[in-house]
Amino acid sequence: MRDSARKNSASINEKLASLAGVATVVLGAGATAEAGIVAAQNVPVGPPAMVNAQTDWDVDGSGTIDFTFEHFLNNASVAKAWIHERGAARFVAPLANLVDGVANIPTSVSIDATLPSGFYFIANARSSITVTTSSAIGQDLAMNWTMGQTGYVGFKFADQGNTYYGWAKLEIDPAGSATKGYGFSITEAYYNNTPGSGIRVGATSDPVVPEPSAYALALLAAGGVAAYRSRRKPTAA
Image (cartoon, rainbow, N blue to C red):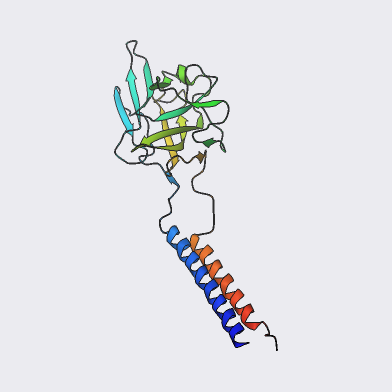
């Protein structure tokens, strides 16, 4: 009977040690977890008020320019505002728009490597998008936007060989405003800083999940309950 009790005690200790080991791994993993969805840097951003000037947007603050917003007058003295895509950075376009306009995307759509039907990342051959021209929407946005409208756009950019996905709120000034020729701005933007991971349009944080420490404590608690019950089991006479 004593040998049986010793075996039961050893078995309990082994289980507790195993659970403690798992808990330690879980806690250790939590210390190095990725931050996930984060706010973009240098926002709000848009074309400058000065004619023939540009504003650069470095989405993640890495020192690499991802997009440039330009305000200029063409040869006919028509005010225009452009978005220039730098490097591998691209905005999401509507598939039906042959001039590659920036898509006005509903919330809940996921921006990632596999976009839903009707959307695609602007082709590599296209590097500039006209947003506004004088008092109207530029040709490249004609199918999706109106003056004074606020909507959501999707984008991707690259850093050190990795691709990141994000969304931004785009606001276009009303036709009667003093900035009608160049007036648009990105007032809010977020991206997923886990390489290759997508983000839902409108999401500003990761889904709420239990912290790793909560899992670890649950494992240890379960082990304690199991040990207590095992010790209280009556032994055979």
